[in-house]
Image 1 (tube, chains in turn cyan, purple):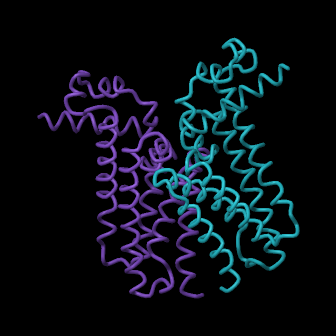
Image 2 (cartoon, one colour; image 1 turned 180 degrees about the horizontal axis):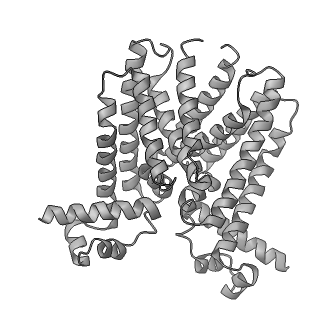
Image 3 (cartoon, one colour; image 1 turned 135 degrees about the horizontal axis):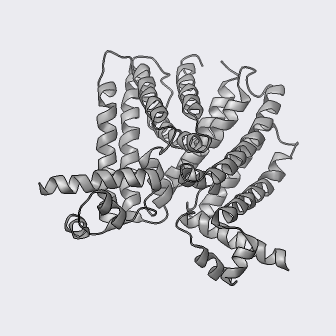
Amino acid sequence: MKQDTKQKIIEIGARIIHLKGYNHTGIQEVVKAASVPKGSFYFYFKNKEDFGLHVIDFYNNMYMGMIDPIVNNKNLLPLKRIEKMFDLFIDLFKKLDYTCGCPIGNLSQEMGDLNQALSTKLTESVELIAGVYKDILDEAKQMKEISETIDTQETAEFIVSSWHGSLIRMKIIKSIEPLKLHKRFILNTLKSSMIT
Amino acid sequence: MKQDTKQKIIEIGARIIHLKGYNHTGIQEVVKAASVPKGSFYFYFKNKEDFGLHVIDFYNNMYMGMIDPIVNNKNLLPLKRIEKMFDLFIDLFKKLDYTCGCPIGNLSQEMGDLNQALSTKLTESVELIAGVYKDILDEAKQMKEISETIDTQETAEFIVSSWHGSLIRMKIIKSIEPLKLHKRFILNTLKSSMIT
């Protein structure tokens, strides 16, 4: 029961932070939306930073759960899996009317200069996501879908960064085009590496 | 004299917003830092949004002024100009200890879902910056530095987006590596287009 309340605060807080940002989200607003007394927040979390760290864990688990069926679908060739991951989020952001963006990218931009504990946690998140791409790219290399000369670690990091940047543009122009462009640019670059 | 006061408020506000974000910056804080009475703020600006629009103009002018000597240096081949633009900001962010990021990218991420007037203005900014890259890429195409098959408009948009995303990663890991990776990835992709 106690875990339920804690989880409820995290889930509702995560949604509000995703939409409005960390600094713009008040604890009062979170407990009100979760219909719990304020004291209950401080029973589960030391402070807002501690709450933020839990929210990042929640985002990570949600993300890994979403991509899991694609990442582990060994019936798909590696590059097709990457394409499907892009498509999954292209469809999601269409449903969200091109709002919100990636919660990890958003928090990184907002809190990167302001909070060391959150930055460290966000770095771990980005490494986790990049790690998923790296593993698939290593497989693509083994299967000769991409060139042996590609640095899979760097390429994976670039994919995550350019995705975050494409989401920024999606948010201001309210269009899915930046995400489609990201997909085309990355996949074309990877595929053309086999020709060069 | 009046213009001086207005400009002073914009410049100081721009610096605070760059570091802390728009929502996290109070008008009170800006007028205090600028050593002007609060009434003076409302003499020059209708409200915080109006102030934000002026701040975006300020960022645009600053950016265009910074890149102008490179963009108009016709002694440099087009791709070398793009490389120099990347290097200019790589050096700048080293001096800034990997903080702040691009004010246009930051505001886009923060305000894209929250304020239509700022989003429209930010879209114009991003188009302005992408336009600079497009013109140079068109020149690179004419001079056969890059393949005729490259869509220069899309590539220019992708360069701006992936740059914004690379700055996000720079901020959390406090390292210049994401910007260097961006430079390598974009320039290699452009150069290898001539081979394929």
